[in-house]
Image (cartoon, each protein chain N blue to C red):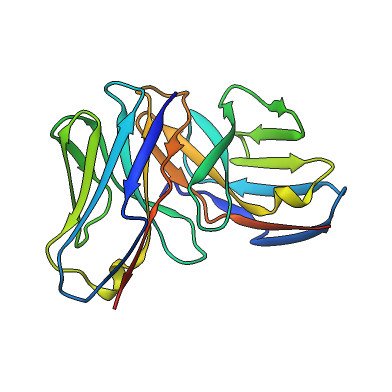
Amino acid sequence: SQTIHQWPATLVQPVGSPLSLECTVEGTSNPNLYWYRQAAGRGLQLLFYSVGIGQISSEVPQNLSASRPQDRQFILSSKKLLLSDSGFYLCALGPAGTYYEQYFGPGTRLTVT
Amino acid sequence: SQQGEEDPQALSIQEGENATMNCSYKTSINNLQWYRQNSGRGLVHLILIRSNEREKHSGRLRVTLDTSKKSSSLLITASRAADTASYFCATGTGNQFYFGTGTSLTVIP
């Protein structure tokens, strides 16, 4: 079965500091990978998705970037965090295609102070 | 935007009652999915309905889809305290998924 690992679980960072969140998956090959952000009490905002190594699509202009250096690794980064980057970051995977559900990791709660 | 919107934003019911939540979306879709999120956790997939389907059942869950009205509903029958969570609809086209704003369901024992 598929497993998604995210770390760290929680993170408190000062404004202007860099960020690196890592997501790794097991039990699948060549998945589509996604980064979502969820503000407190809100829905999910799709940030990035990747259909393969080195292939990144960005949904919204922002202070963040993503990379996929390996098939089962997806990294979310920032050079300088803003207060507005605070939120709950979720990594998800989905098989390629139209009629498949997504599987979500446990998430990382980021607080920018 | 393809993002869906759930209605109501919050719902509180007694255990044993049925819970109904609705989702509206704006553009054409290939499928619509419902997810559940317990507080502070990742989302868990509940059910997927394709654009050519009108109704689907899974245990105590019943989902309907009306593509002419661009809306879907999720019915949870005989609710339990463990059903307390936020519920999100998600619309998908190809590789991308867009989630709604969610309905927060509280089931009172």
